[in-house]
Length: 277
Image (cartoon, rainbow, N blue to C red):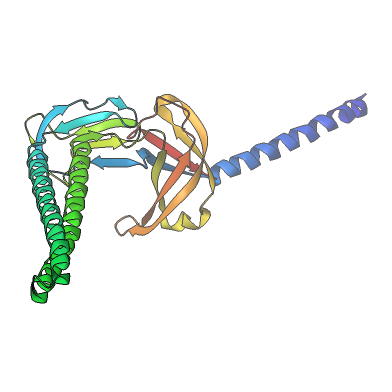
């Protein structure tokens, strides 16, 4: 009876040993993994600014607004461009007037030259007069060519000035969320000074720092686990960047982890953790 019981217990003891080994391996893997603290960031944050200086006439968005690509953000006045447009239009009128004047003079002198050539054939005018008229005709023909180019150039300037009007309406270069707005109606918009900061939510990453001693455990493409505790989200990510510049105080390196953002509730600035196996 006792031997039978022992025989029955042997398989159980074998299963129990395997379970213990599996648990020990799992515990060992967990112990060997590294958990890094990080922050959700947008890898496509844009500083929106105007191309021309001018007073802000209208602001169409506020901080926290979601905008679509091509949506109007703000507008600035067009006084400077209006003035440039007036000058260019005046230049076109002057160039066209000069061209017309040279064309009229050329028509008259051409007729006069033909008449003098007939008179020269009858020996009624001097050859010198005919040569002078021929020279004047050639000069006017050259002036017509120059005046025509001046008209074309002035019209090209007109198209360029008109094209500048579209830069008075500043639009979103891509879809995203307005995370900062530094302008108000009546303020001066300055070229190169960020007026609006747009963050792209479709291209989010995790920014974290890894110790120098653990840097050898990761490389580009390493699969890691990304957790966002506040939303109870856990997903797989990949190391997309290793910044080759350490923090001399902490001897850590910054890394970026990309992940598929299928969650509309994830925003830049959220706390996240990265588990490196």
